[in-house]
Length: 93
Image 1 (cartoon, helix red, strand yellow):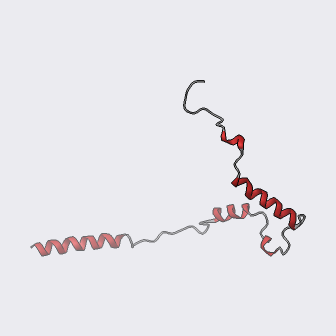
Image 2 (cartoon, rainbow, N blue to C red):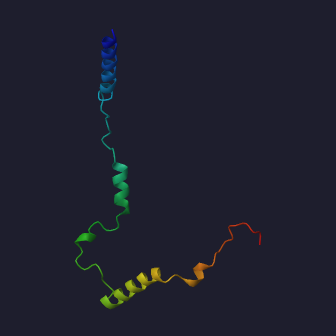
């Protein structure tokens, strides 16, 4: 009796598990078109990877100096930025 009940429960569980595999979702033929359109709209120049001379208009020394200034801007914090702009503690002054 107990084995018959356990077998019935297992059969029911097996049928419930197989129920999830019975149907597959049917996507529309345009599934993902909006994402692909948004990615294409954000691309400025699709052929940019084929450009063999991408840095027209700036010489190497100027580019290096600009890059070094940019990197130093993260190492040396701005003195004016250390003072708080807003009093968020609510002192009322």
